[in-house]
Each structure stands twice: as C-alpha cells, then as structure tokens.
Amino acid sequence: METRSKRLTSMLAGMLIILVGMLAVGRPVQAKVTASEAQKLKTTLTPLGAEKAGNSDGSIPEWEGGLTTVPPGFNPEAKRPDPFADEKPLFSINSQNMGQYSDQLSEGIKAILKKYPNERLDIYKTHRTAAAPQRVYDNTFKNALQAGMADDKPTDLAMGGYPFPIPTNGGEALWNHLLRWDGGSYSQPVEQWFLTPDGKTTLLGKGGGNHLISHPFYDSNLSKEKWDGTYVTMIWQFNAPPVRSGEGIVAKDNIDQDKSACWVYLPGQRRVRQLPNSCCDTPNPSMGGLYTFDDTFVWTGRIDRYDWEIVGKKEVYIPYNENRMFKATDSADLFSPVRTIKPEYRRWELHRVWVVEGTLRQGQRHVVPRLTLYLDEDTWSAVMSDRYDAKGQLWKVSTSHVFVTPEAPCVNSGMGFTVMDLTTDIIFHITPAICQFQNKYLAPEETPASIFSPGGLKAISVR
Image (cartoon, rainbow, N blue to C red):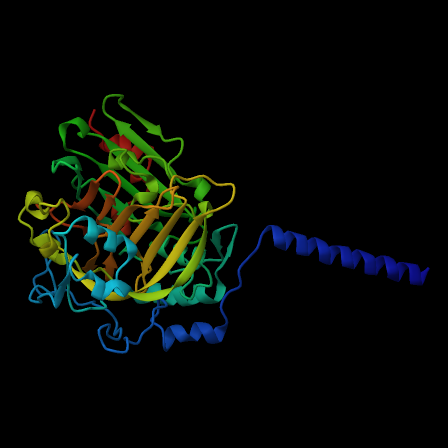
C-alpha cells in the first residue's frame, strides 16, 4: 500500500509539473534582466538605456544629462525658443551627394531624395538633449528588474518609467516607444495640411487650446491600484476649415489594446459616436481619413499585428532639436515648392537608432505587411518609418517633428509628423500652429480624466 501510495503521489506531481509547463507555454513571460545588467543603467548606459559614450569620431557626443535648463525669459505662451539658433549647418545632403552618406540614411529618406531632386537635409552638430525627471529614471530602473511581457502586453510595471530599458526583442522596444516620456500633459495646437501632386496646399484641420494630450501612466498623483491601464489620452477639437469647424475626437490607448477606444463628434449629427475599430489600418478621422491610425505619430499601433525583430543599432541622420521650425512667419512660409517643409526650418543630426522591423504575423491582416521603424536610442521614440506594400515596394515614409522642451524636461516627438505617399505623391503634415502659442505643459489636475471622455468631448463641441 505504501509503495502504491508513493507511486500515485509521484504520478500526480509529474502531472502537475506538466500542467504548469502547459500553462507557461500558453502565456509566455519574458525574463527580466539580471541585477548586474540593470546596474549598467547607472554606469555605461543612460538611465533610459542608451549608450552613454559617444561614437569613435566624436560626431555623436557623450550623453551628459540632456538639456534641462530653461532659457532666460522663457514664456510658455509665446513661440518656443531655439536653444541652437546661432548654429549653421555643417553640410547638406541631396540627390547629388547622397551616395557618400548612404550608410547613415534610411531607405525612406534615400527614396525621398531621389524622388524630389530639390529636396535636401541640412545636417547640424549633434546635441543629445534628451532628459527626464529623476522619478522617471528611478521607475525605469525598477522596471528593468521587474517588468515582463505576456501576451504582447507589459506586466509587473512600475508606473512612470520605461518598461524595457534593456530590451531583448522588438516587441519590448516598441512598448518603450508607446510608453515614452513626452513631458506628461500638454496643450498641442496643431494644423493639418494635405499637399497634392499638382502643388495645391489644403488645410485639413486646425485646432487651438482644446487640443490636449495627457499621459496617465506618468501621473505621479495616480496610484497603480487606481490606474486602469490607459497610458495616453487625447482630445482634439477643430475650428477650421469651416467644413470641419466644431468637429472633435477623443482617443484612449490602453496597455490592454483591446480596451483602447476612440470617439468622434460631428456637428452635422450633433452626437458623439464611438468608432467600431480605432486601430491599425482603419482610416483615422482626425487625419481626414487619408491615413490610418497606425500612421499617427510615425507609429501608433497594436503590438500583436506583427512579429517584431530588432535588426540592430546604427548611426542615422534623423530629425532632432527642431525648434527652428517656429521661426516660420506663418504656415504658408513653412512649406517649400516641393511641398515638404522648407529645409531651413528642419534640423537633422546624427544619432544612434534602434532599427526594428515588423513582419505581419500569421493570421493577421493589414494593408502594410512589412515596416521598418527607427527608434532614437536616447528617447525610444520612433522618429522615422518605412512602410512597404503587398508587392514589397516602399510605399509610405514618415518622419517625426522632434522638439526639445527643457522645462519638462524631455525631447518631445508628439507635436507633429509628416507622411509621404510615394505612390500617389500625396504628402500629409501635422505641424505646430505656427501663429499660435505653442505646446504648454500642464499639471495633472489641469487635465482630469473626465475631459478625455465622450462627455468631455460633448461639453466642448460646437452644436
């Protein structure tokens, strides 16, 4: 009897081990980094996971804490100042000399230079201005030791910090982008422009003080127990052109991406409606329906649509510290004859980027079966993207408008972007509203959750 009992106990234990193993396979959890690896965030790496050292020839300098000093006389109600206004371009890259710099250019930028021979990149001295409050650094360190990922979602997060400063796969790198520090909550008056192949410039939308963005994930007043997983919320209301005046949109992105949602208000219907599918390749109404939700801010999509691979890290010319854009006298002055933003109002610098490639996951559908994202190593922001069509041809190229905001402090990539469709020759821009006050950072109590709701949208809408 005793022998039989022991055998039965052994059998049950074995079955339990197998069952636990099966459950683990069904819900995989990536391992955290070791304590010794995490310690690099306080030595050879920046607190957010970038290489602290510069490159071999000094063209990329050492990170020394970023830009955290607000310039004298700074006025948040005025145009944002350029801390590097006196600098001149080191050189320019165009279609004639791009071959010399091929290794430092993305495939999309090379395609743009070929398609538009008069286009150029003005290359400036590199400044590693990225910074964040100490609490962000502290929470990022905690996440390095405790955060994992299961079912394409981050788990065991310390709120208010990057989840994977030392990523082991492309999905983790993309969550760093989605949960990046953009300064918390801020107003974002913007203009949307649609530029046609025949040279016409059309205003698609313009909004003022009711354009707000909030990042609850970084709200220091919000406890993890009360956090519902929403990491960014947006409310935009348009006051021009007349056909869109009074139109509004509210969006919420959640860690559980099935819980992300978007509502729109159309003055003609006088009611708020929830969109049935506010993600992926669905046309985005805030962009006039011309581009998809995924196109927003270079990439705002679902992790589970693609299999993500970190191709590697390389030195690439990317838009950075572009406060000079505010030198434009008005919106008409911003665009060049080739319908891109005038080169003198953009700034390109050499930075290291993580190159992450997404390939459509088996069983999923999307009009873009493959894309490449370029994540700035200092901020994890996707500053450029290359999107390919079903035939494998380069289709759309996106670039972010990247501004330095030392009062936050941060490098903010959420105030504008450009999408260029190489097949239709149509270009879409979201730019700061040059003639209005610029983005102004707000305290959490100035952007309560009630604003970012169907009721909040209805309250500000024009009937």
